[in-house]
Length: 151
Image (cartoon, rainbow, N blue to C red):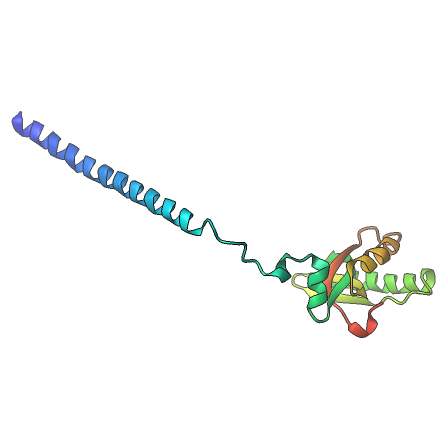
């Protein structure tokens, strides 16, 4: 009977030691966490100015970066090519005074039809409102532009 009690006492001690060490470890972690928070709480925002600027400013800084209007995003190259031809015909008939180049761009796994070359978002949005009459799903995107074709 005494050996049974001794065995139970030893088992309880063996179970208590890991729990006690985990409690000490938790206290140690909390102490270090508090120190780390105090140490780094005073840091100033280190995000470079170029990344905090609005998208128009960023696009102006990167060479050949600008805006285009995307009128479709599809996995079917034939659909993209067909829509690009439709856009070209529409521009020739409806917007005779406007020159807007169209591009089929492949970014895996999608084919995208982008139109126009604009240096700033405002000009792209103005043209986008005209394009949405015929292609209602069109929207302005940031893209690499051809500088010689900028309107």
